[in-house]
Amino acid sequence: MNEEPIPLILTVKLDPSSQSYFNELRKTHFPPEKNYLDAHLSLFHQLPANEPLIDQTLEEITQKEKFDMEVTDIKVIGRGVAFRVESPALITLNKQLQKAWKAYLIPQDLQGLWPHVTIQNKVSPQEARQLADQLKETFEPFSITAQGLILWEYHQGPWQYLKEFSFK
Image 1 (cartoon, helix red, strand yellow):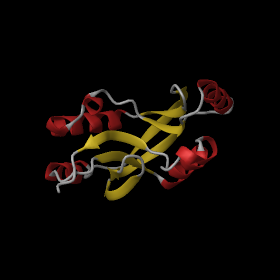
Image 2: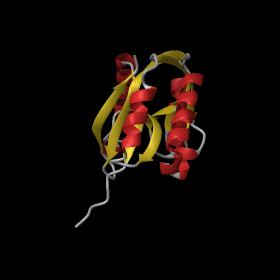
Image 3: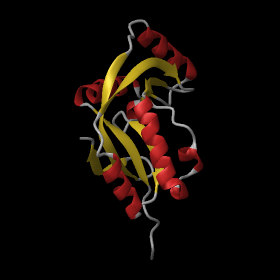
């Protein structure tokens, strides 16, 4: 019996201190029974497994230098809170990947990218607004670094690490 291939997710690999910072916030503010992922910045939500063009394109595109991104704001996202990330380099990278993979992308992945790191979700809108207001009291924009890209297998909830592509 043939099983459906497991779809892949592509995220940005953040520098260790930024990853740790976002993970701690997520552990503190995400409902524990629903928090089975580390904090992440997603680029693509459903890529085809076993498609050689995916790995080939990622090997080529990560030949560039790692780059800084700016965390510029805290946003309420309905039933959660996210840190907004701005980066012309990341937007350019995403558009290059969209062009290379257009035939394989779902509608969500063909849209414009809104880079963000979610630290709370699946709570009431009021709880989300309260956390955002609390975080904004001391928030100052800061830089984080994109160190590469990570492919994950999506298992209807949890993700399984598959492969990493590091920038130079």
